[in-house]
Image (cartoon, rainbow, N blue to C red):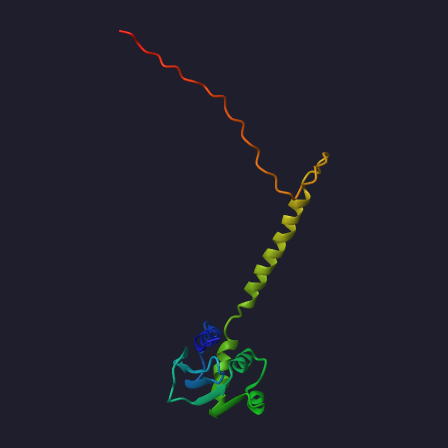
Length: 171
């Protein structure tokens, strides 16, 4: 995965983020992976969150972390304290600002219920398709077994030849 792909996946988590009521801050995040290493920032200013793929030098905190650890942190599967204690993350500056950044996700509406509805719709369609297959009338005639051998096409019978006779007019 490239940095651009990883960044878009992370930024997608903040598409509907709500930063109202959160104090202004800027956090610079450096992904430490070999294949998708890079830097981006998250900034809350005037209740609006911006996540962009650039350095942010006037930041409140810097977070060095791998992509998988960051996704686990943002999903709530691991705490920042635990990631730092395990050596998966390194924080320089105000770690509370990273917690504030994470809070913007919790306020965003979840997208999972829509996916569950789609699963239910497809599950409902499958039994209906099966019922139509069961409604085929049973044939009382025995069908001849199909041969797997390829048969040659039938030769066409030639049409009878007709001869045209010349008619000449005499003047």
